[in-house]
Image (cartoon, rainbow over all chains, first blue to last red; front, side, top):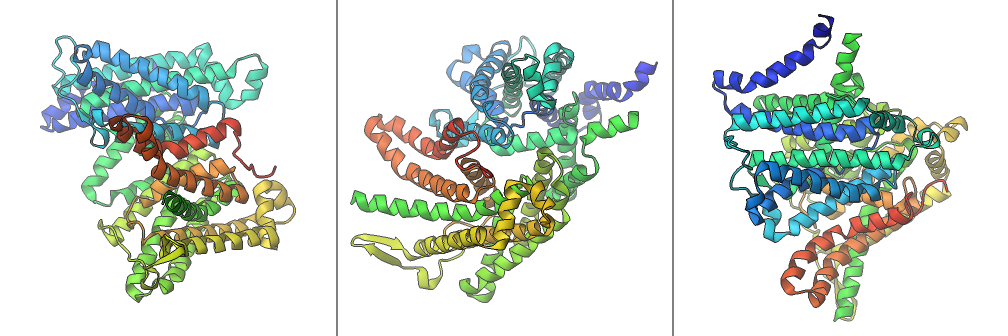
Length: 313
Length: 306
């Protein structure tokens, strides 16, 4: 019973997520099912960034590079190798390819730290952005439309409700994986590095190896998010690699709560819902969003997760 | 003929680099003294450009509009510093990123609300619309030449201010060791408000000088902000000398990349491939420059306090 009360919010949120398509259909707003899928995908992206920033203390402004790259893997496979475009093939492919990219970029970027790390990750993302802009064979500036969603067995992926549950399942898998990772030796070492890297180093941990592993995991997960977003939108474009997107993901993480398992998802949900609600009030909603974000910085420095933690105490 | 082209691109690079320096000078000091990542620095550039364009339309004189726009932007900058940013100095970089990102949203949307969606265009002032023959055969736009002269004058003035005056000494002291400067009796708080106002005015000057060459529109701040941060990092955070050399380096590499990489590639690669790779290689040249610099000097070319 105590467990039920302590996790009341969590259980309510899970039930709501599971029932959402039914609820949306019941009130005749099917449109919101695809919006919800998009929110979950943003949540996955922010969650992967949170591993890097919140748990590992590596502030990256180039996370969009991996998101966009994962999306382009889906787009390019659909165009050049349609026989591989089934989801069980193309999603792992996107994850592995993005992981390799993250390994290469991370190995170079992790030589620097602090503000220099922020800027060098940004530089790599911008380079990738311009490279994809110049790939005329894959649509260049205009992007690349997909004919259909990556097929998954006998599921009707074109149906937004089916796709929503696929995204939800993958997000749940990633969250379970991250929850296990946080409590493992790896997760503890990573948090130790965030708090005091020199001490961890003198304790004999090869800190660079741990940081690089975290960078690769976060990159690969962002690649999965990108691959899902490509499927959701049926469209891939260089904008998915733009630094705007890295910035928005970072804002979601800070808004939701750094280092908290649910922080990324909570931040994404709140950000997207705010956007949706405020747009319906005024076309100048960004002013209000800006003021709310300022309020968060000054009055809730630990994000939404921090608010809940305080109440629980 | 190719020499003419080369010299012309050198001047273009110098012109771009000097304008970049105006932006970076404020950014690097704010970064260096208060350890504040100010993403909204580009917004001041945008606001300055909008204000100067509006004042030009109202008064009919670009020369009159520039000081008005500079003063107004400096006031806006100081008000923002005193109300919002002052609370952020002691906070971590991430809070600063979130807060200044919020400021960007507010600035962009307010600009849209006041000036509308339409981009503003500003004509080159009548007196400077012609071209000047610098060398036999080398005709160069008089306005761009004026930008170079203004940029050089401001850089010289800043050098004098920072290296030769008491205020400059305080600024340098603050940049290399804030705590020690405070302990020695410097009122860092007011010093910083002043530095921020000056930085805002420099942003507005860059916005004003570039506005006849570009279009004045929402979002112009963000595209140049990235370049400004790249420059700060290449030069070394908090160093004026680094900012100056970094800005010229970025200006020249970017201009040369755009002018010379595509034709160069066409001589060694098949035309179709060269046409595809050229522009992107030109666009990534400065990022490549930054990666190379950070690879050899992880603290930038001229780290402050060394």
